[in-house]
Image 1: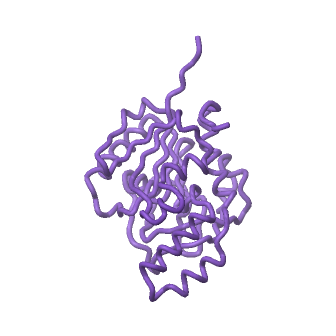
Image 2: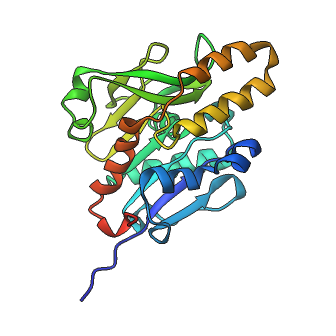
Image 3: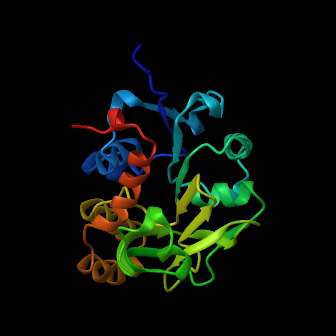
Length: 247
């Protein structure tokens, strides 16, 4: 009898700006492409549209995307997702959260989320592994310092009880959080390649012409971030779901 694998849930918490969607992709396509995930194995649930996931037990794992929303807005769909994640943690469902997903899980479990003191952290920036991160099997493929793509105004200011901090950046001390063996979250975006980050900086320059020179300078440092991408791909592989890998 052939075993039928449970789907991987993509909990989509928002959409990329229209300019990014037109030139690059929306969030779900970014995760499919950078995570090497086969679309037929993925159950995409767009929370802001009112879509709701099945119970956590219906899935082999969940990936939580970024969002233009803020966790501190306490939007109804976000609060419902927080309750769902608490249930998922109770059954030790594998979880990989990114940006908004990173903050949402921390908030759901009793941490503090709020605005970064020095403003938005954006661009291709250096991430430094902490000693706890160097000893985590999920991070073994990462060097002590690696590049990642970021764009966020809010952050995890205080991790929840039981969370371990595995990495930091110059502006944010909580870039990777671990919750036991089942949940790992990143403030940075492993689903962003260099082209996507470049277009985000162009979009920000159009929105904030007074800061155009700064964004143009940051564009000079933009690159692909293969090590952060490996973290996302490693999560997919760790589900024991080789069928979920494209190709």
